[in-house]
Image 1 (tube, rainbow, N blue to C red):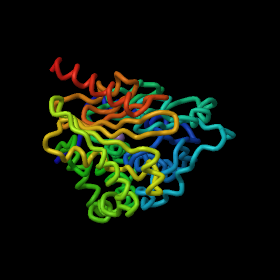
Image 2 (cartoon, rainbow, N blue to C red):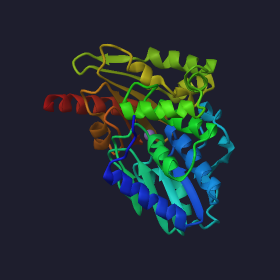
Image 3 (cartoon, rainbow, N blue to C red):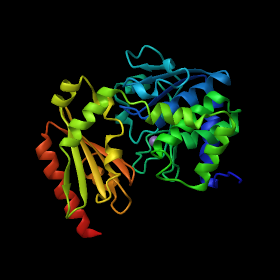
Image 4 (spheres, protein in one colour):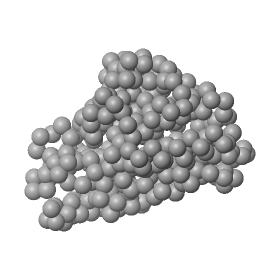
Length: 329
Ligand SMILES: [Mn+2]
């Protein structure tokens, strides 16, 4: 199968490559609470820049989630401390808005150009070059095309990009096209080990996170009329099980396995408010729903944050909004 970008995407890749070639010092970052696509895409771009003789650093607002610590050279991903250095170009990956990079924004004050590579529909196009296309499964899939132009792909980078695609498609469930599968196939040919990666990401849950999951499932609610299923994770549940937010990985995706539910969400209590992750099976657009509450994402997976609101208030607001929107379909 031939893999060819359309004219518009090809032009964006040209612009990105031009900026890469003309500059020397790069800072790479992504959104707060990064996922597998974000971390993997960063590491892939980092390796690529280093190989072609550039200086590069990955600086994020948040730590790398434990489940992605298996990725090669993951220690290169640093958490923001200060903004002493000056970079020529900032590469922002998998991130819909500049605000979502958090404190790392301070590193961009002296940066002259921003490259924005993303597949979120709601991307605010904050870069000097904006390669934004929601038809890609993952940011990693987009990065693959930059590799194709600039360099070879080694086993290490194949591992990154395969992990990006695997996790952003929720284990090859959502957003799959023959192109995505073709890229995944090529990455396996280059040395990515599908079983090993899937095991690390999905099949090595710490016992304490399963205990947290049991508590969360005990709070499961179902609204038959609106076909919504949801559960919550409270600060108390974290305390009882000795866990943290990163232990909720996969919870909301589990809820989507419930046949009766068309929409699912997970409510997570934080010290300054409530975070909600939404999932849809396709009939309902949860990106629009999250956007209504100041968040964003994709049609089938999105999220938002309610500052200084209680779980009960948020539950009510969300259900009301879903009910209102169903009527418009
Ligand atoms: Mn992504």
